[in-house]
Amino acid sequence: MASRALGTGVVLAIAVASAALTLPTAQAAPAAPAAPERAAAPAGLHSDFNGDGYADVAFAAPGATVKGFAGAGYVGVAYGSSTGIKNSVKKVFTQSTAGVPGTPEAGDAFGSSVVSADLDRDGYADLVVGSSGEKVGTGVGAGSLTVLWGGAGGLAVGATVLDGEQYDNVGTHLAAGDLNGDGAPDLALVRDHDLQSLLGPFTRDGLASATTEMPDMEDRRYLDLAAGDVNGDGRDDLVAAVHSGDEFDDRRILISNGSPAGPGEYTRVKGADGYSLEGGEHLAVGNVNGDKYADIAVGRAVDGYDSDLGLPLAKGGMLTYVQGSATGPQGTRAKVFNQDSAGVPGAAEHSDGFGTSVAIGDTNGDGFGEIAVGVPKEALGTVQRAGGIVIMPGTASGPTGTGTKGFNQSTPDVTGTAEKGDLFGGAAAFVDINKDGRSELAVGAPGEDTGAGSLWFFPATASGPAAKGSVSFGHGTLGTVAAKAALGSSFNR
Image (cartoon, rainbow, N blue to C red; front, side, top):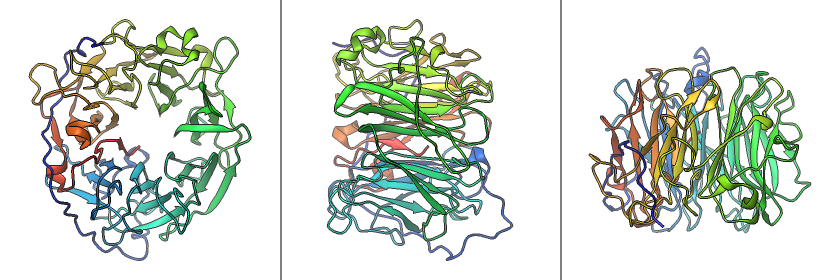
């Protein structure tokens, strides 16, 4: 059933041309870290890969064909500047790029996850790339993590951080944050069903200072990971979206507080009824209400299970907001929204996928974080799964439907056409590309042009994201193979 179009916002579409894969040659990097007198990258610039003071954006195409191998995957980066994205400086990295470990193989999914942080504390942000399908030795589906080191010239050569073993699927879920409060970024990942933390700082050969592991004692299935300081103690906490065993109905939100030794034991976020708060599949952690505590946004995009019977707002997907506090997440005060909530554009319909992507960022500079919620399976008229995205304003009491904007490829004055299966809104991110105190909006449509995928970027204004000055690009700009690449599946966070 088609739902009404989302709002009056504007998204700039792009026709993506298929081209033979031409990859840039990575510059050689020094064997040692950059000059020691350079300060560590500021916390707000965790994605400044070239150290020019402007945040950059990394993106993934895990289904891309590389050297003839379908699904080998790639990641790319677009660099920020005072005028926004630098159109002339975009680079692509694969496992065939000089200096990047590994070899492209079918199904590696290089780019299945991407996070950024200054792992070696040299003042340049680095990019960590998951390859969940990587074969390691004879281990099928072992997975791996690769770091691409930042430097004055941007991202360059890399190192292997971790190789998995058979069916570990390392790189499926990944988060970065200072989990032990020592000022050095750490990594958290899922290895089979166990949680593993790699504590920094990291050496240039990719080795962590220490490793901790939290074995799975409850047969959990991890759906997403995110990190942020939810209790304001100066250490990032680890938030997980999980379901239990084979029962997808039992979706929970777990939090592991940071400690000097790294993440501790998980506790469940509980609701007003004293039971575990219903969770979802997608997470974002950031400041929505303007206080000193990070908040949690959970997207529950998959509807139709028995657990929805007690959750009327689960229809078509829902967003749950949980504010942080000195005692951690306040699940008893959670707020829940879907497309039938007052002010939210669209209409809640089964399988819309509201909540497939979730991101938090201050787009208008008012000190409150907006929440971007992707609705990639939204039908626009008779066009099925064309997709859209909504931006919910932040306030002192959390997100609100009032003033929510909607964007899609059928909005008036938008260049391009909404097509079946575009999945616009399948990924979203906020990043202050031009350093003006407002976060621009990045949107991915991994289904664009029959699975090729594309990217869109919207400048931020005093009233939030705007269409004027938008830029978009895809495989024609990057010189990559378009077929089933799923460009725009994710952005770094």
